[in-house]
Length: 176
Ligand code: AMP
Image (cartoon, rainbow, N blue to C red; front, side, top):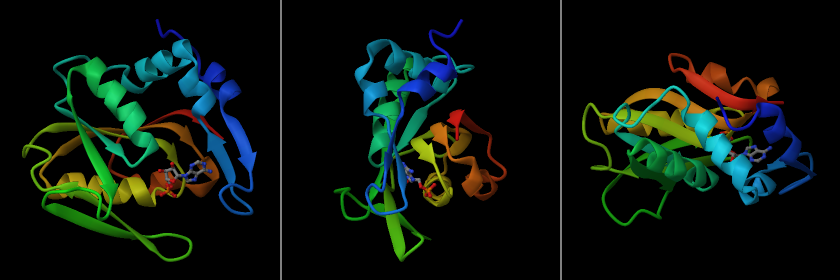
């Protein structure tokens, strides 16, 4: 039995209008993180169906994805791998550039972060247009990882991010 319901998660996610810029409804997850029961329960739900031994690495996306991916990796006794913004990782990297509404963004992974054939869960806090997760999935592919699932706490369904992730199993705990 899960410890919590998706509705309880939804109730604590705070909507902050016009942050970081006008027109954006920012989904603030800090009240969820601060609640011991809801934080633990959301990790249970993000990893439900997987047990220790099923997954080799949980890949988290900079920066809020790290919080969930690291806790999920601990629960599944898997490794944790960061996908970071360009220029932050110290060793040799693969990079992937994708389009934002205005301009582009580049993310990176260490070339040896994942063993070829490793079973990977990819995680972030929120699925919006799917550009970030699609680029991260491409980085996992470049290092030879095999994505079992892409998991998010939140999905903004009107942006249809799942269409950018077609071919992957996608999980989101709450949708708006
Ligand atoms: P996208 O590439 O459009 O799917 O955007 C996803 C990334 O941007 C995630 O790493 C989110 O943390 C962040 N993000 C996008 N929109 C929001 C939002 N409304 N509230 C909070 N974070 C967001």
